[in-house]
Image 1 (cartoon, rainbow, N blue to C red):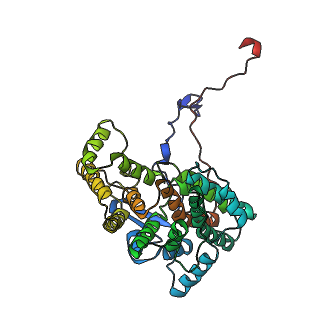
Image 2 (tube, rainbow, N blue to C red; image 1 turned 60 degrees about the horizontal axis):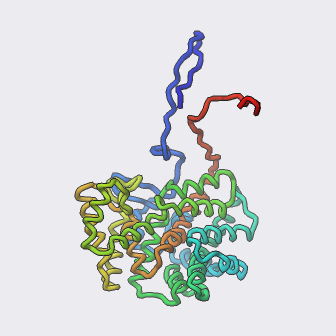
Image 3 (cartoon, helix red, strand yellow; image 1 turned 135 degrees about the vertical axis):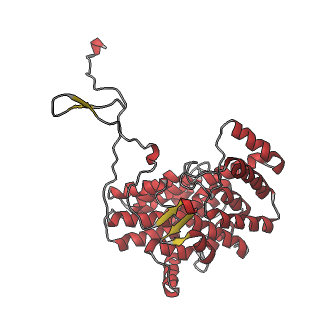
Length: 390
């Protein structure tokens, strides 16, 4: 932008400082939050004050969902009541099923879950600024129904009948049931549950910030979540776990890994699953998810993906000092669980709805319209010439 000038008190023109433009809002503190904290120098992420790797190791995803939404870990009775409420709301209406059935089978599952959530928002009139209890109820409703929407679309695109949710199964068990008609062994379910905890929340990331911007206009929670899903779809955000597995499939065998990576680095191309906008020295969620990947590899008797991953990580960390992020072990972990690659980011949605809802509630509680300004760098003010003189 050209430097602006204005008259000083003595009538002379004074040069003003150029605006401090932070592309991507890097380093800009937009607001306060009590939902989560990233401590990059300690490679740590906390939810409501609890380290995520501890939550993943010691708590179920349902406990973590309760924590994010209410601010505290539940007692036994509180957890039981929360589970009853979530499980009672899992199924979707016949009309909702009909809408999902009409989706093109070629559509990406992120497009279908975005539209399915938007449809849910048409079933009631909702606005921002309503009593928190109403939006808490809507948040639990989406937590319960989003996995059902994802699994229903997954079944239909395979030409198979949908499988209705079961209220006697845990959140993670039920998702496997609705997708595959069976629940895998406990170690597989536990690995999936841990992944949901790891993906549940991450401060003012792109999708959460998108949701908060929408919330700040006093729009409703369904609109905020729909917008957040749109932001999460991008490969630089939620779609990165899909891109990681596509990268591993392209490499295919451990014997090709080093040459593939060095060729990629020589061309200065992006290596998916490494580096992070916030974490410079590693991500505390990676070790527990990597342990899950090892366990899944042992369970499946397939160490191909983990061997490729070890080669890539060794070079990236050892030579480039660039560490893996959560998507790096999650991509192959989901693959070994049996999920198709295009379902990875919708699974992210099923988890992150907890963080999005927590931020929506927080934004509503102390709202101010989020409306940044820009530095204009276009044409100077011009006069419109008549057609005959153009």
